[in-house]
Amino acid sequence: MGVGWEWDETLFSGTAAFYRRGRLPYAPGLADVLAEVLGLDGRGRLIDLGCGPGTVALPLAALFDEVVGVDPDAGMLAEAAREAAELGVADKVRWVRARAEELPAGLGDFTVATLAQSFHWMDREPVAATVRGMLRPGGALVHISDLKGETRTVDGLPHPPVPHAAIDALVRRYLGPVRRGGRGLLPRGTPSGEAAVLAGAGFVGPYRHVVPGGQAMVRTEDDVVAGVFSLSFSAPHLFGARLAVFEADLRRLLGEVSPSGRFSERRPGTEVFVWPRGAD
Image (spheres, rainbow, N blue to C red):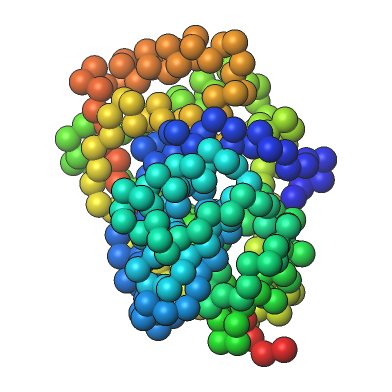
């Protein structure tokens, strides 16, 4: 991670209960695209690093014999286990509380590893090398994220757009101008350049695929509030004794934008980079 910031266990503290409702989903068809480009047929093993509440691991469960989700946050894993039970896949999914830096942790080898908007929180060089060593010959690491640089218009949609800029300004008014991250600050944001890190670890490629988004969604006021509290830089614990006051101000802002309590938004596209393990 960046200079002057160290990971701590409060990074996503209290966000798990809001995550599934608040976060925009990946584009529909992600599992189908991965099945096609990786030749997945229900066999093999998947490890999902920084799995959160199973956002990626659970939709992919049918494509593998076994799925292992790894995350350091107990709340995230509890949400993931509950969702797995509701989906009827608990028997083929295992949840492990650990940081990626603690791998291989006796977990064995895998056909595919996934990193879905989580790599930037890790000590990336050693994690990349370790994960490559845990992949079977012919295996691959898949880096998944929202499509960067995408413009998602809300023209013609039935409700006002979510006022993201105003929400960000309100968060800064309460928490200060520098992005928060656990107990520390991220004055330069999170690091980029994951391609150089993965290439340096010996992965080859990458092969880029885009799963198109753009589908119209209706978001309620409660969905938008959950989205704010699902983010590391506006996690509930960061507001301390002012949490209730902040939420009241947030809801007041949202009510002024949309008195009906409904907002329109479009699902983001999803960008997938497949990095084959390569030969030793």
